Length: 198
Image (cartoon, rainbow, N blue to C red; front, side, top):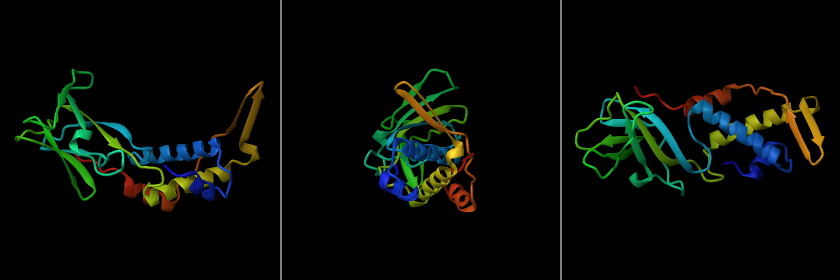
């Protein structure tokens, strides 16, 4: 997550309010949708993966522990089913047909033990810890989020803001204003988009 002081600086020195944090969070969610990666605080993330038909099952990201260091196998749970909605079967790392987590060149994958494969006819549900501590986002991702938030903030002029107060309840919203993707943004997104392993 991006700390308030960096957000304030990107937005021209404003005193950060919840509205600014919401703006930052929306842009971070947009980046996550574009890249298929998780950049929020460390939490359990679940991936639904189709088996590869080989001993390797590629993960979208390298799992992390709560302190941000690489995960150990006990941080992972794997469940498989023949098709979505079918009965779940747990797969444990300690079983003869279990798995081992491997990390190689910034990618992560699970290797089946005992010569077993990740059957291509099965769906695998992998749950792992993933995310970043406050202030520890990769610099290019943080910069992308802050640039987009700043562009959106500048676009929110008086003509785009709508307010209403009814008794103790009030809200302010802005009309939907798109933030263009500039070349630097696209380059960063391209570098972080997850690879597709067929």
